[in-house]
Structures are given as structure tokens and as C-alpha cells.
Length: 303
Ligand SMILES: Cc1cc2nc3c(=O)[nH]c(=O)nc-3n(C[C@H](O)[C@H](O)[C@H](O)COP(=O)(O)O)c2cc1C
Image (cartoon, rainbow, N blue to C red; front, side):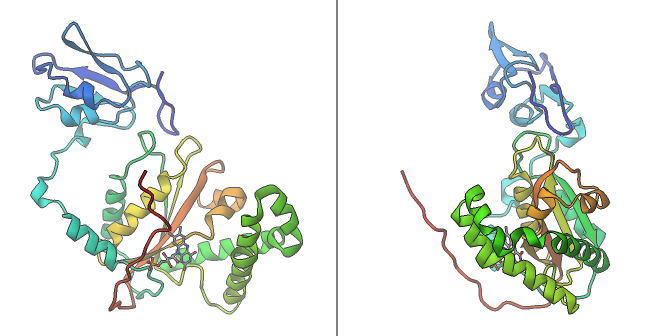
């Protein structure tokens, strides 16, 4: 058996070079799905065993002798590259400083984000973990202020059509279906927000995407873990920060895209059955921060 994803079915192909294999067992230890095992002191591979080979690449990444080759499920031999030496990788201090300096940026320069920079962000995103390889994350790139504005206009049309569903007279029904927290969110956030965004839009102000010159919508297939696109968007945000860009996650559109908006989905090639994703807007910041802000999480519980 092998786990099916949106773009892979069946196991990857595992090849063992027995002339190189020293039977050290490291690959068996690292194998996360069960296809590699030892029998009679010899390494064995059965690509269908247990969860089947999903091409996670753990085995070939630990093999000191290059004795294992895995191909399939979108993994190609040229994807196996040298690991960057530890001294060239970001230290905790460097990473923490990058993270601490990041702010949600809502003011952007007119400057367009170069395609080469977008490519670097996407390259960084491809290093993100995913529930089951290969990743089903899809990225819609709205490249340019006009494209972002067009999407905002199409989103506005969706809200105009669906606003009644969140109006006060529907709240008792929401309470029964989704609980009191949902009604509190509707009353204090979602309904006023939609009204606010529509009102501002009517005056030519973009409080949805803040006239950003670039936006990326991360979404994923129904097979995937629902958080895969959120992790991908987070990687993109950090990569963007390292490249001198500002960014801001926009949460207010994905629930509407998920639950309807078929015309919008078709127009932007978002498969109708895809799961809720996350929008990230980006651009060169037109604002300069002097201070960083230290924050807390709600709770840390050691057990
Ligand atoms: C999932 C998510 C959704 C968000 N949605 C919006 C949004 O729709 N509009 C907006 O202006 N900011 C949005 N933000 C940005 C938050 O408001 C911001 O992260 C928060 O105020 C903390 O500020 P900081 O990112 O500068 O630390 C969102 C952030 C996240 C993580």
C-alpha cells in the first residue's frame, strides 16, 4: 500500500547498490514508512511494505556510501544535492534576529518585485515539510499591483453576494451550527470587517491587500494535510523578510474561497475541491520600523 496524494499514487522506486552497501542499517533507522528492512543481515527494499515508499528521501540522505537510489513520486536523482556545511547555515541568533525584526507590512513602495526574487521565495517554500510527500501545495502568484487589485475586485464581488449569510439575523443559526465562539467572531470581527472592506473599497481604498505589488495564495488538494499551505506561506514570509521584502498574511479571504466563490476559483485556476489556504501579500516596504516587539504565546505547558 502507498499513500495517495493529489499528484502521486503508487510507491517510489528504490534501488540498492549492494556493491556500495555496508549493511550499516542507517537507512532502515531513518526510513519513516517501512519499505527498508534487514533480513539475514542484508538490506532489503519492498517499496509496497507498510505505508509504501513515499519518496521522503530519508534513507538516501543518511547513506554515507551513496548506495540507495529513490526515484518517483516527483523525486528525481538531480534533486539529491550536497547538504550545506553547518558553518554556512544560519545560526539560531541570526534566525531569531530575522524573525524578531519582521513586522506585518501594510505599506509598499510602487517598485515591482522582480521575478528572480519571486523565484527565490518559491525555492525557499519548496524546502518546507509537508504531511505526505510530494507536497500538494499550489501557489497562485498575483504578479503586479494590477493583478492584485483585480483579485481584490473579484473578492469584493464574492462578499457583496454572500454578506447576507453573516448578517445579524443569521447569528442564532450559526450559534446552533458552530457554537458561541463563531457568533462572537461574526459579531465582533467578520461581519464588521466585510462591511468595512466594502465601504473602503467603494471609496477606492484597498484595506484588503493594501495596494501590494505582489500576492501569493497558498492552497492545497483535498488529500493533503490542511496545514501544509500555512507552513508554506510561513516559509515564504520568512524568505521574503531575508530578501528585504515586507509581507503580511491575509486571512480574511480563504474561508470564502474554500466555501464557495466557484467563479473566482475557476478564473484563478484554484481547483474547486481544494482546501482552505492562506494569502500572503508582499512588496518592498514603504515604512521603517525602529523598534521590534517581543510577544508571548497564550500558554506554555510542560507536562
Ligand atoms: C493567519 C493570519 C491572518 C492575518 N490576516 C490579516 C488580515 O486579513 N489583514 C491584516 O491587515 N493583517 C492580517 N494579519 C496580520 C496580523 O494582524 C499580524 O500578524 C499581527 O497584528 C501581529 O503583527 P506582526 O505580524 O507585525 O507581529 C494576519 C496574520 C495571520 C498570521
